[in-house]
Length: 365
Image (cartoon, rainbow, N blue to C red; front, side):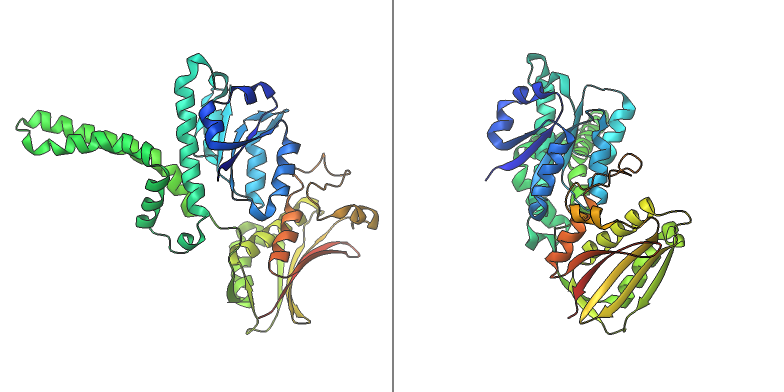
């Protein structure tokens, strides 16, 4: 089954220049603007980790890097490769900080003069696909170690790795037969350089694997120590938040620890964005009718029923009054609802006298 490769670029001429080897190996999906990409994202919430994205640095005067960053912050993670006609060092550095698999010169893709660029694209896709294959194997995900990582990556990137290993192997085989000290030093330095090249090739993939997570992984854990630790992990942001953990010590839930953290982080960020200063954000955790409730409240303008009727938790929903004042893609609350429902729970909003409360309810175990 082919892996989906989503290409996001407002210059539609790029779609006709994608090399044949890419179209033969991947199911290419073309998105000519940010909206079409985000619509694709929201249509794939339940299978969000099964594609690779090739993203232009600048799309319709929007930063492709910022769009991907905002999705990552919401917990939507996927391997990304950036491409652009902008060859400035800062642009490449910004892209590498988000997408470590490669940076491709767009103008030369699919041209007679761009064979090396097509090779770079092929290598970047191989690294991204290797990480994707690893992350989507749930049985291996829970038994992660260097040996298993190597096994998976060798299987999915065998050709690329052999290109690095063969000269290393050839040089190493002749070391014992070298009698000249200077030549021996030169050969050892050459091997060290080739090993370094292999390391640079593999590091982005290993880094992505180490920090990756499956979409949803259930485990039973006690709520009170969890929410207390999470509150303390908020760091400086926690200075503006008051925690009310009114829940028995023995209460536990069967849920994904990491995804619950993302839910609460998304709700806290929303409260910070749309609340009035001083923020006075409150994080509540309590028991109600055999369910654990997590709520985040802020002080600000209450959301009206008219706005709620449009669908606060719908993908890409943004209040027109603040859309131009507050950055965002309208993804966070939609993901909150999805993740709550995956745990047999629900997400909700309720206005207060002086602001808004967003929360989720999850069944106790």
